[in-house]
Image 1: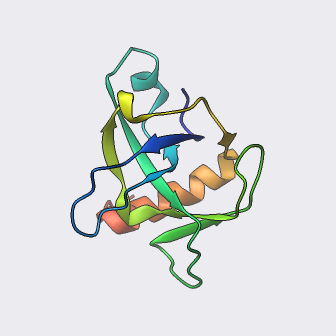
Image 2 (image 1 turned 120 degrees about the vertical axis):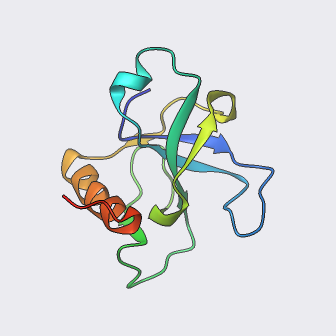
Image 3 (image 1 turned 45 degrees about the horizontal axis):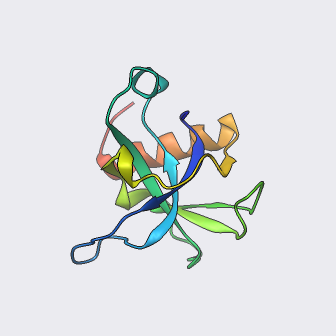
Length: 114
């Protein structure tokens, strides 16, 4: 797997307001971790419940490849999952400029100063 790819993952069981269900997730961690057999992966879930004007909490992407619906990447739901939760091979991938936008939004949400 590579940073910027989208996979399906089982996010159940969920607690409280966490996003659950089987849904697409963006692989967010660095490729350094992806290539060394790390057993967990930092992901950001996607939702087809689109919310306009939700910057910096959501980033809209159009359907592409095997991603069947326009989706919001839900920045404030970033999490680490065990790799066993991934249930597919890559279904789509983001462009580098989209990952740059997401990095900026994650920095805002997490309070990281650049």
